[in-house]
Length: 132
Image 1: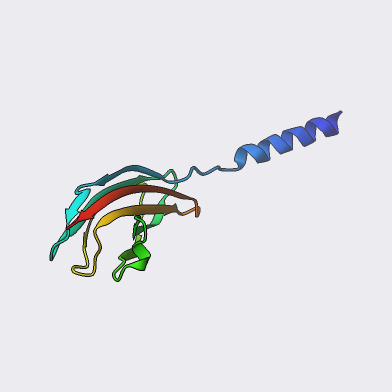
Image 2: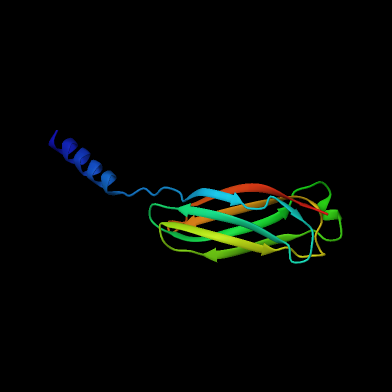
C-alpha cells in the first residue's frame, strides 16, 4: 500500500511540474484596403496583433491569387516573406507595394502564420480584391 501511495504521489508531482504551452494567438488581422485599384505604386495595407504565453519568434505573410484560372494567365502574383518578432504582445503594420503592371485583377488571399518559442503555430486568412 505504501508503494502504491508513493508511486501515485511521485506521478502527480511530476505531472504538475510539466508546463503546457498555449498556441500563439492572432488577436486581430485587419486589412485596411480590401479593394485596391490596379495602378502604379498601389499599396496593400494591413495590421496584425499577436500574443503568446511564453514568447513569439516569427511570422510569415503570404499573398496569393484566389480566383479561377489565375495560374494560366501571364502574370500571377505571389508574395511570401518571414519576419522575426519577440515579446509576448506584438502589433505589426504592413504596406506591400503591388507589382504593377504584372498583376491580375481578381480575389487574393492573405495568410498570416505566427510561431512561438515552443514552435507552436496559429494562422488566419482573409481576402481582398484588386480591380482595374
